[in-house]
Length: 256
Image 1 (cartoon, helix red, strand yellow):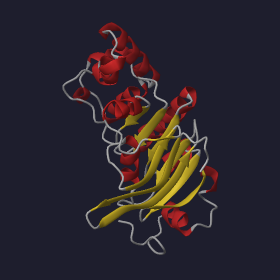
Image 2 (tube, one colour):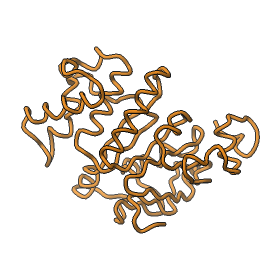
Image 3 (spheres, one colour):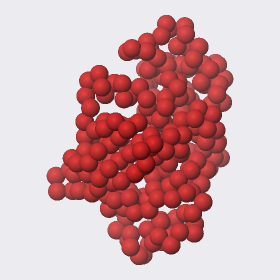
Image 4 (cartoon, one colour):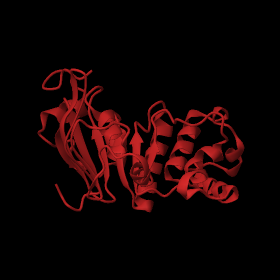
């Protein structure tokens, strides 16, 4: 693995009872790179992401961010790690009881980075504009927004604190093709503008082709292939070929 990697996973393992979900994941993500992890349901994508975020502690292996092993960090060390991260959750995960601007500014209103309310609101409105929402959306509740608008709010929240690393969990799930395309374009533009490192998990090959610099294929808890996005249609890797082409037979017929 490269010593200049922003994120490294070295032999990461995670099991739940008898179910070995991650069986030795090795992955390297360079600074300012957009890495997309693909694979069928139940193959370890979400668990991989949760281990990097510190939401789960791996049973073995190392996870390094900026060269420091972060697996299992707790307390202040974990808070310092989380300060580097932004996250767009699959379902939006907005707080229904908070106004839109309060959702966007959530991390700016607490902890060590706590800002005055007016300053936090101004940043939130700026980020809402960046994702294509007008200022009047700031004082609405999430339930008053369409699914596409909620996804934009989630993206605005992910970038509000100017994170070094942004995670995207199935960012276009539940969106129509037109809105999904808009969100893909926004993700790509914003990640490039910020110079952030991005890690995305998705089933959507349109998203993969739009936002990825590199792609990693995970199956049975192991990274089976990693390469530039431009090679996903030409690689002779059987796992990638079957997944990209939606084939029901072959080496990954167990995808569920």
